[in-house]
Length: 212
Ligand SMILES: C[S@@+](CC[C@H](N)C(=O)[O-])C[C@H]1O[C@@H](n2cnc3c(N)ncnc32)[C@H](O)[C@@H]1O
Image (cartoon, rainbow, N blue to C red; front, side, top):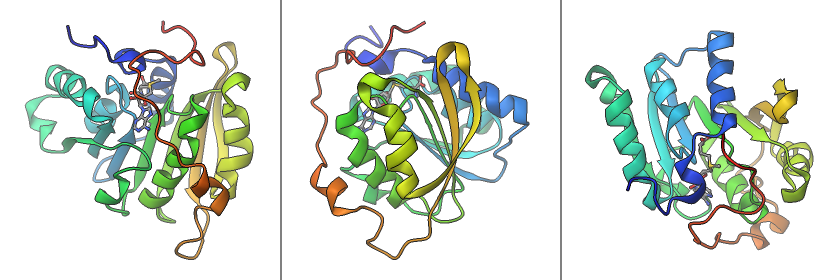
């Protein structure tokens, strides 16, 4: 069965829906823009970005790609498919296979497990340049350190602005741009020393609330 053993990747999370609604509300289009999505899961955000005109690369861990590809086949008309790629990207591991000239980086509900935060910062720092706009949609949960990740860690590398909040679900949408740094400055030694690969258990971490 598709989605079996995919853990958190098998659900459409509220953060993804919230980010899609934000793009709709703001009238954001991605026409002619180079977009990469991190932790695509089912692919709801990357699929919408493609339908809104973007040249989109949807990424996740290798085991999730088949699910994304299937959802792309079902939801993206043939006429748009040439603007869409699905590629493996595990944060902190193979991000250097990707270019650094994206107009947009998108991520919904990818800030939920503190062991991945240093790797996520490293990947964001590689992919973004000063002209890149990053949208992250996160459900802030004290127990996994996501509030301090957004309020203290990310602002060391990115200009971060809250652009929307869904108070009832504790979902916050951030718009970020990279702070101008010299090459090699982006990842301080503290974060570099903490780089850890998340164990691949395939199960839903305790830090995530139930899917809808
Ligand atoms: C909670 S799901 C969110 C899925 C989707 N973005 C959504 O909003 O419905 C988190 C996603 O991040 C991916 N992910 C977690 N850690 C990752 C890592 N180290 N590298 C790449 N992807 C990762 C998971 O595989 C999963 O698909």
